[in-house]
Amino acid sequence: MGMITHGIRQLLRFGLLEARCCAFAVALVGGIAVSGQLPDLPVARYDLLLLYGIALAVIARKLGWDSARDTAVIACCHLVGLLFELVKVRMGSWTYPEEALTKIGGVPLYGGFMYAAVGSYLCRAWHLFDLRLTGYRPRVMAVLAAAVYVNFFSHHWLPDARWVLAALLLCATAGTWVRFRVGERDHRMPLALAFVLIGFFLWVAENIATYAGAWSYPDQLTGWQPVSVAKFGAWALLITVTFVLTAGSAGRSLPGSRAVARNRS
Image (cartoon, rainbow, N blue to C red; front, side, top):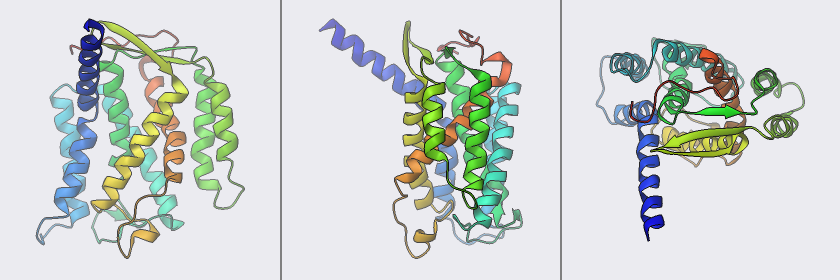
């Protein structure tokens, strides 16, 4: 009975920590959903969401949720995401149908916050779960993450190499473990499994975001449809880009590196 009680306690602790890690993303998606229900305003919705995203980032910094280095990583994720959006929207992969002043090449500047939210999640997880990596290959992972990022552009003109890259990532992460702390107990999981789990929850979040009108895929322009399950796999691959950026900051990519902050922070 004691083991069951302890297991439930650990699960509740884990859930609470995950909720804290997702605070930025939940607030962002929540704001997108609320903005879709607002009456007509003199400010375009996408422009309003840009101001809202900036306000969230400032609040997170002021509250101490993010360090200066975390904020830099999140800003980098925002820029990387914007470049991704500019290419994909130009190729017709999805659209932002509403008008806005802060819209470049069909992409509102707030769009980068969707990727910034993923960066915020990883930065917070590193602190709150006291993440450590063992058997991590930073240079190999950096090369593969860059190849994954480029492939999401180049597959419009060249053969799609995502399955080859997925296989290479499985090889590169073989023997790589993510160690994390919940309460006073350490746990671990394979890095590849972490990518799959994060990819799944990002796919769920994408369904919620598109339903709230954050952007629209071609088959959603005449009415919302669930996002293709294929996007789940795409997110599981694309998360490697954000992970490499986050792990590389402050020497976090070193095997056995330990974040200073603990669960109680």
